[in-house]
Length: 338
Image (cartoon, rainbow, N blue to C red; front, side, top):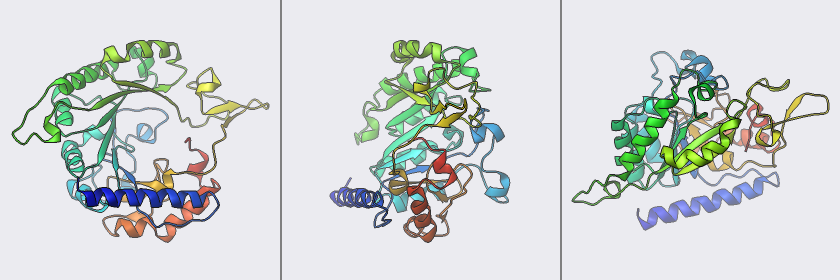
């Protein structure tokens, strides 16, 4: 990565944090570009997780939102258009949003081009489609980090949330990733992609009542399963006011707490949200969204295929959303967990 690119990204990051600091005092000022971007390789998923909009409908956004003939997969044309606009400013690309990224067969090409641009790359997957070849392709692409979701050690606990999925497929996927990572692939050019992989394999577990009896076992087994790191994550739940069967029995591990009236409420959050200042989400069709909680594209800034990202990131829609977000007025802010 050139010195000029490093300088450009550092200046952009400093401007971002400065503008965010001003926002804490109610001043919305945007003189920067996103420091990270989440892109959506696929808006489809093969599972039916009950608290996921994609799982509920198996396709989000709907055909009506996508438009006639639109593909649920991000094309390379869209991706390269995105990459050209973010590489002078961003330091990280997350290849996931709503759907399952591995359903897009061009994902390794996307990752490789991002790495060639000096961007840190992350993929999050349910691993149901992962094969030995996929594992090798991801490692060879230069991927920095892969998050593998596994919300149970047995099929019973796993399948309680990951409906339609197989826990054995996840376990195999972790082994294949570990094997692919351990293989050196020397090259005459000795590029960063051809050395022993530095890929971090992260096992992510949603804290649910259906798997809370396994949390200690996850801590004991995650390395043996093939992961480098274990991450527990609290679950976002819909219709939680009267309680929820997936809500952990210990409220310390839940996003919700029971009030004196017997109803459940979202726990209080800190003031301010760095994410809507520092990043954006770009859907499979190029819609630019404020954050990952805009699951139904309700607050879109516009489409990057029609308007440059620099204009979308600073247009009236984006400014209005950030002003409202300061007081957590938008519905997605009210449901957020930062």
